[in-house]
Every structure is written in C-alpha cells, then in structure tokens.
Image 1: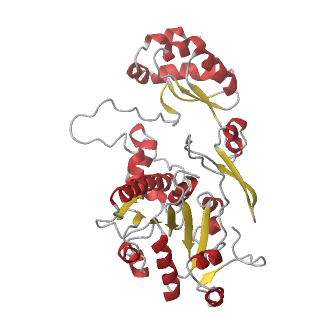
Image 2: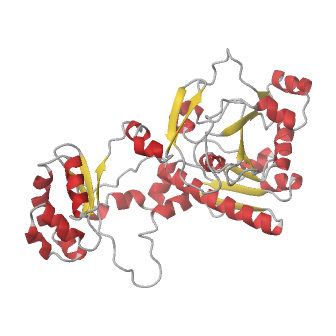
Image 3: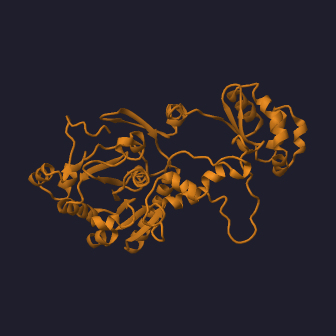
Length: 400
C-alpha cells in the first residue's frame, strides 16, 4: 500500500511532459488510468522514450471526439481525484474535457495542465518540444558558455520535460492536501518554461548585487575550476569535486604537487586554472579512473568515476543499485523483460513497487468500461464502431 493508495489519477497527456508526472504518482501508489486516442499516444512509435514514462498505469483507448467517448471520459472524471495532462491552451475546452467541464461532474477535482510557455501571455497558445525551453531560459548558453568563447551547447533531451513533470507532481500533492483539508478542488498549472527555470535558477538574479558568481565552463567543457572538473585518465574519465575543507590540499598531496597548495581559495584556483590544469592533466593520465578514485577516496577527496552508461546497462545491472531498489524490472508482453529506474523515495511505512509494465493501447479498456457501468453488449458496440479500442493477440499495429 503506497502512500498514495486510494488516489485515482486520470492521465490525459501524451508524449513525455504530460505522462511522466502521472507515472511518478503511480510509483507512489496512486491508481493511474492513461486515457489515449484509439490510434495511440503520439509518442508510442518513438519506442523507449514512451516506455520510460508509462509504467504502472491502466489504459483506456477512446475517441473523445465522439459523444459516446466523451461521456466515458466524463464518467471517469467523476470517480477521479486528479486529472493531469499537457494539452495546449484551448485544446481541452474544444474537446469538452477542460477543468470547467470536468468540475461539473466532480466539484472536488484537482486538475493539472502542464503547458509549454504557461497559461497567460502571447506565447501561451503555443506548444513545442523540450529544446525550445532550454534555449528560452539560457541553459544552452550557460552550458557553452558563449562568454568563454564556446558555441551554445545542446543539452540532453527531455530535461525540461522531466523538470516540468516533477514540479507538476509537487503541485498536485499540495492541491490534494488542500482538497483533503478543505474539501475544495482546484485548477493548477506549470510549464516546460517553468521546468527550465528550475535548472537556470543558479544564474537568475534580481534586485541588488549578486553574490559570488559560479565560474563558466572551460573551453573543453570539462569543468569550472581545477578542483571541480573532469579529468581524462589512462582508462576513462574521473570527476573530481575537491571543494570541502582541506580537500584541495589533500588532492595536491595525492597528486604529488604540494606547490599548488599555495592557491588557498577557490577564486585563486579559478584565476590560475590554465597553469594548474596544464600540470595536473598529464598526472591523471598515468593511472586509471578506478585507481584514482580509490586513491582519492582513501585521502578524503570527493571524486567519482564517470560511467559510460551503454544505454543504461552499466547502471541498471549494477548490484548495489539493485540492492538499493534503484532498479525495477518487470515483464512486458512484447518487449520481454524490462529494466528501468526504480524507487526514488523510500518510506518506512509505505512501501513502493513492484511496478507493472507500460500498458498496450487499450489494454484495460473493457474492465475500465465495466467499472463505469457499461454492459458487455454496450462495450462490444463501442468497439465495433471504433469509439473504444482493445488489443487482440493477432493485432500488431502497436509495437509497444
């Protein structure tokens, strides 16, 4: 019984920015019903990005543009605690599943919309993809950084999607708490732009003089100072973060460069980074990343081997990660045995997991419709007319 056991969430979102948040709610024990078109979520054909944000959900495939399909979704909203989606502004209203329409069936509903640019302003009606918000909040500029002579750096796909989803989960949980305390439901929203702002928060400063500014990346984009950067070794790369009290001196001791201890402050090391790094880089090339890791750990210097993930294999087949519950694995009827990140929060009294596989299109259409009061004959009729869909064994239209 997870901490959100008994909470029913309707996931009306598609792609990544919408469904990832409800998946995290499912991880915490909520019953999440994914509602998607009979043709499937638009990201299903992308493969793994789709699979990565759908586990643990039930699935209803329905044509919400048909009156009978709309009625089924409205009936679902009547038994839900939360409705969550990422439709562009005005889309849900045109479909008849906006907050006002759903609230007419369920006044206590918590409704969350994750937009692209937000709910107000000239860009509010636009949609878009993750890189646009990396760009709009200056994340690519800062990762360059252009100020150091580099070109902007395109960051890994999906970071503002996932940040937006995490912020939406916080908002939903806060609104649920308010609902339980007052009996009042409400509408809330966040956006991919807001998610990007989370990652840019260390450089967004307003009113007054800024405090110490984080140094920019070097031209090789390995780090911000000699004591906080990646070093190439004889075999692989090592991340050094010698920032704690006394760690710089201990690092210099391990590297047999006591002469560099004279750079006593972080600012002094940044100012002399060209001299220091030119001397230290050849030293790190004399041993492997693992050997340096153990040598520095023994000396009390923070460092970690930079793991080549090999599409997640190095992380998801790590014995310590499995023991810690960070790895989840479950069978999928088409893909076989899947591995994915597992428990992100551990509770003493509310266990999380095990996790079910991502559902096929309409995998639970029939039992969900029965739960809503539809008879077997009514469901068969809706299936025959293409208003709802359920998979059959010989139907391979949906590879995932």
